[in-house]
Figure (cartoon, rainbow, N blue to C red):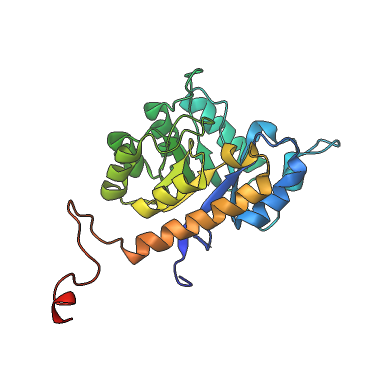
Length: 258
């Protein structure tokens, strides 16, 4: 496992758990969450970033070693997402960007067309683009052609903690898309993150499930271990499933000689 390096956007990562910065009752817990989870990538909504604030800023709580992944939360169109990404770069947040284009206010489902359009523009400008999408094969293929660095299909609508409701569609993406597949949104329990990794997902992004737990730091630790366990199980190659029983030791020729 020491050689199981996950590389994306030219950066080598030892952790396949991405974390978020939203919904914490106190941003002061974020450093402890990062340490407990082992995560090296953290996403933050640019609208929460105020570098000139003198009364505290979420950026103050993000450990310096973390790869910052600003997101375009709040963008309703491709043009708005592009403007937010350019603003993030101008503010010194780097070249990584998670594209979110959402005009649906009830389920917060991503707009595939707008996401692909924004991805194509930003990839040409040198951004490392990680788009948040429905688990849709055709949208994912559009994003490959648009220059995305990964695809981030939802397991369930954002913030629901409902788990891998789209598992079969995610399985298809893992099989068919030649880009890292990072399961994002909906994962509510470490066992679900573990399942996604066992399926062959390259990473998981978890925010709400950690931030809203009674003990966020302990939950972050659990997710870190679950993602690692799922990855190890995938690499180990699970045995085949069978319809009928298959004894693990011989059933004949033992009592007959007594």
